Length: 622
Image (cartoon, rainbow, N blue to C red):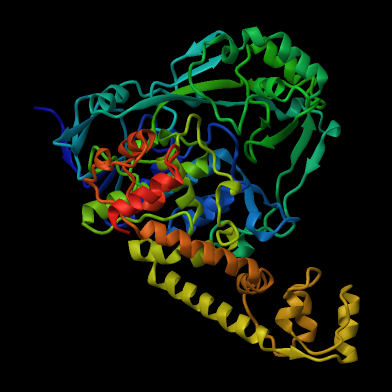
């Protein structure tokens, strides 16, 4: 008997949110896929906040769904509260956010994986990647078993050399006390991959029975729930919802934190990793926002059938006694019993500039990477990258063109472009402000933007694609009809306008022009539109947005045209930047480091100026 050897098409390392999407994509495309995890019980686990979506992250989930991913469908099956955020603002920043039943979410995703053809789940730690002449040939587990493959996707999350810390307690485990992966980093480094050390943190969990909710503000879900997935029946998600609760820290909380900063591993130098700027610990908030006398604290249920509550907004790595004293100063938490301490977690990840926009390593062909391992934070960012990495690993094996989404067509494109072209010194978090063309990249039109790519890849069925084409046709025809339907100055029309607090008409007007009035919309004008056809809710929504924001949308589309021109100007792979006389030294260094694939990408690299781009354009004869 020798060493166990197996042959598969694709290996996925890690079964968090990135790994699940990568493995499902590959298996659904007919490739024999194996997904490795240090614990089968940790599949799609939510070690931190018990929710999916939120500002800009909701966009990512909708895009994952449009491409044929699983996250949106899974949260629709397992949510306990749902809200559309930013409804008082324009549609560009509307974002769906749902509280998840953590255990149900993980179990439901595991069930999907277990029942997917061509997919095998394997509990084992991958210790090495096998590379020959810059091409990945397989992976080796701790036991010495070799799995030969045509492509692999690294989705190790926060498990590589993970260390959990609070106060002076430091344990070498992954989140929730699960086993860390301690071998793979050395193999990656030996193959020339540059590693960095990041950190993230999580707050305490408290026993619901020990909370005084009368001192908090109740936060309810939406009356009418909007599903994440375009294929979920909206009626199926109208379910009883759980409440969340809002309270605040106060000066007493902040005083306890300030008095114990010397005991925080964040400030004592015990933690070496860089943490996320946009998701700071409570001690960070108190230090950096010293002028604020209170910070929001959200109490969120971890599930329907547990008393564990998540204390959102108070992640920490302070010692246990300080944590208890600090939480007890918060209104409603005076007698709170802690179920799990807050802790920080440090882990190994990569500098993502080593990746192509397809998420394949530049130096190791056939090796792809997705999720927190790429230096990002958040379940949604992870799942989005995992899906793209899984699709592209599959395209590689099939000898087909890879899927690269650009900044003008998706939040996923913005996320990946930022990771591979910008210097990220901290875990990257998606935000609507990062998307220059956000009016075009709304969460409501993700299917119209991206369904075709999912169909071309093979993850969207003929039936789903036909439904999309019908929707596009209905939107186009209805916009056309509304723009060319004219109403006169009859008393009936003006009565309706007055009732809607809108100025009466002095002359004829199209329905389109009326919809553009700030106080009116497509829905409100139903009374004066006698020929209106019966259309689905999502079609009516698109008609309203496209007419109402017509001028802004056209302006952004012109900007996108300019952007596309720069993206189309390709840079040869073998270009010698040192031979370009007029390029500044810094630009040469950065361009050599990042090796951009086109002029657009080159222009977004920090340290490459517009003047350098002009030199490059002249040199390439563009």
